[in-house]
Image 1: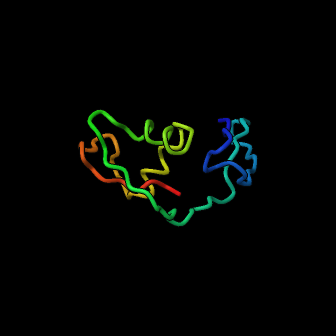
Image 2 (image 1 turned 120 degrees about the vertical axis):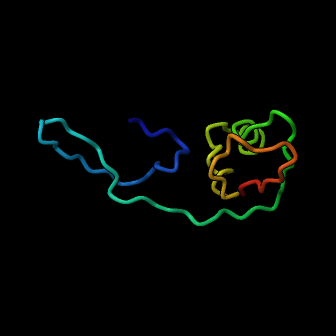
Length: 90
């Protein structure tokens, strides 16, 4: 699986493993678990707004939506109600 620029997996060390059937597999040697990002901005969700939109608006990349989920401790970010107040990752 390719790792895109800006991914939380970018820059991690990988190793290649030979599986019993001879297929090579790349595995992460260790996973960096970042601390919670500081937030100085809060956003109140409007109807139909989703994390990918907020990510594009505030961070410039819609694929960084997971940063909103992490900074707000969201388990299931697809069911956010209108009016929810979210911290914007710094």
